[in-house]
Each structure stands twice: as C-alpha cells, then as structure tokens.
Image 1 (cartoon, helix red, strand yellow):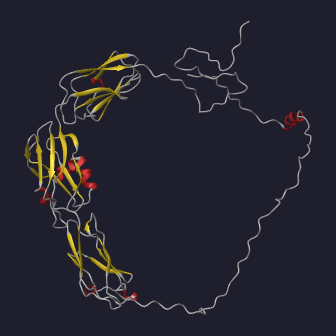
Image 2: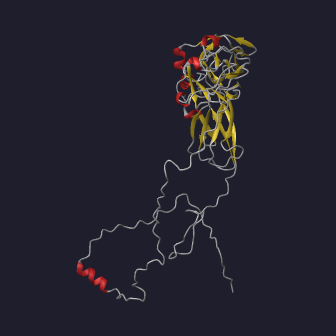
Image 3: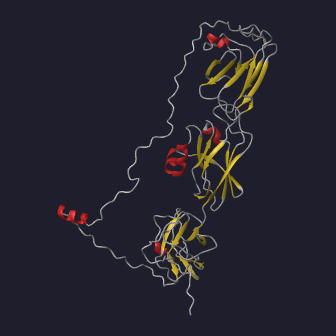
Length: 436
C-alpha cells in the first residue's frame, strides 16, 4: 500500500511568460426590490430570540476622579517685617582684567570682549558709552561701536565683523579706574589676528577640459583681482604659462564658471585664463601665492594654494564593463566608457552594435560613456562594437571602429512568492500557493 505524502508538497510546472487572463465577472445592474418582495425575503429569516445578558444597566466606575482641591491664599506683609540684609561693600582693591577675547590667531572675530573685576560704570549709564570714556585701546579700530554688557564687561562690535588679514593690538592702560575707585596697576596688552586669504573653491577641477579654459578662484574674503592675479601661475608639461584676466563675456559663456561666480559673494573671486593654449592631454597645476594679498587687511599668504585639472586628449574607448562590476547576470546594463564626455545631442544609437543580436537593444549616452541595455542571455559572450564617427563635446570624432567583449554569466537563482511578507490563503479555495 502506497504511503501518502504529508507536510509541504511542491508540484513543479512549466513557467509561462504571460499568465492566463483571469475571468472577469460581468457587472450586473440591479434594481431595488419592491416592499412586498423585501418583506417576503425577511420573513424567511428565523425569528430572533433574546439571550441572557442582552440588556444591561449602565455600569458606572467604582471610583470617580476626585475634584481638584481649591488653592489657599496666604497673605504676606509688604514691606516684609524683617529687613533684608544690606548690600555688601564694593571691592575697593586694585582693578584687574579678568578675561578678554579673542586672542592669538582666530579664523573669525565677530566682536572684542573685555571683563573687569570691578564695576566700571554706573548701572543706569550702561548704554551711554562715549569714545573718550572707553578704557580699552584697539589698533586698528574698524567701524563699529563700543557698549557695556552689565557694569563690568565691555564689548566692541564691528559693523560686520573684524576685517580679515589683519593683526590687532589691544591695550588696557595702567591707571584705568573703576567706578568704585580701584585702579589698574600695570597695563594689560594682547593681540589677535585674522587669517590671510584662503582658497575655498575653484573650477575647473578634474577634467577633461578645453585647452583655454576660464578659471575661477574663490576666496573666503574680499580680494583685489588684479593684485591676486600677479601671484597666480600655471604649470603644465614641465613649463610655466602666463595668465590674463578673463572677460565678462567669457565668464558668462562658460556655464560652470558662471554658476560658481553667482554662488560666491561679490568681490571674493578672480576669473582668469591662460595667456596661450595649454598642451593637450596634460595635467595643469594652478598655483596661488605665496604673497597673495587681501582687500581687507595687510597680511599676505605665506604658502602656495594649488589645484589641478586635465586638458582633453584624443577621443578613444577606455573600457566596457558590466554595470554590476565583475558579476554580470542576464539583463544587467553594460557601460562603455570613453576618454572624453560625449556630445549627447549628436549621438546616434546606430553607432553601437552587438553580436550576437541583443533583443530590445538601447544605447544611451551618459557623460563620458554609453549605457547599453537589452534582453541579454545567460552564459553568452557578446561583442559590442562602437563605430567611427562618435563625437565628443570638444568636436573630436572616433577615428575607427572599436570592438570589445562582455561575458554574461548565469542568472541568479530566485525563489519568490507573490504578495506581501505574510500571505493568508482563502479557506474556501484549494489548499495551494503559487511560487516562482
């Protein structure tokens, strides 16, 4: 006698590309039943019989929330019966400078702060600060205002911030007197400095780019373009190239340069170009400084700030790779990379052919490459040919056909169940579940 199988049983079937169309139930337009017909249907229902517990009285909770207790007003005499302790006697010893800021080299200086050990002004005159009454000397002093924060701390707030590329000297002279009579025995001196110009952004970067590009150098502070240009040099191919100021039209015609200029605060960038064409297919180094001046202060840079970019070379095919790296299962896109960005407007799909034929072949230019998609078969080697005539953004064309191979491996094993993570079977249907 054959033993019956139990548990989860799998039945294999041939897969089909398109499942059979499900049967569509015809929509029936109904009409309302007449009252007599409706009553006749209801009369066929069994009579409802009451059960114990169908009706119950409303059940109140055993304990209700207690109402809030009213507050109690406590009368206090005013003025208080016991006099408050008298204020302590003011400090009449020598005046000291407790702290000050900023000090040393700082990236930014929004304000100057000096705190004394004794009150320096009466409380009611904190907002009244005359220039001759300021007990602090600041050199150089930019546009701004002095003000007291309380009676012991003095602030100097410049109109915007302390100008960059500047060294500031601060002194509280000996003999400075407080409001309580204390005097400063020895002068207190310190200094702080804001940094010289720093290169923050630039273009071009990387590459490839044209041989006479518009070059933008942006800084963290205001600069004089003509003065900065005198400290800039270009080096490429073992020699140095001169630079010239770029015109407004040249900047406006270069989309990338124009975007950077618009994103940079006015007066903080320099636009220039090489005085002669740079060599092709060469790494170009842009050196800014040393000695680069600022338009805000006298300090200059003491080091070189550099960036590089690459000029374009002949158009050639670099590689053909599967979009998923070394593994290349069926239906995975391929990517053919070129040495230069392609002219996407001039690109023709027929420049890319595949052997053996690739069903639903599409070829789309993307930057410096072409993405190739189609219904590739597993365990098959395809030969992709890019034909002469492909154009890059510099107007160069591919001189001859180039063919490269790509190996498509086996498809990944896949086992899936349609639906969500949990599937509830219809209890009225056959006990089965389709899996693919």
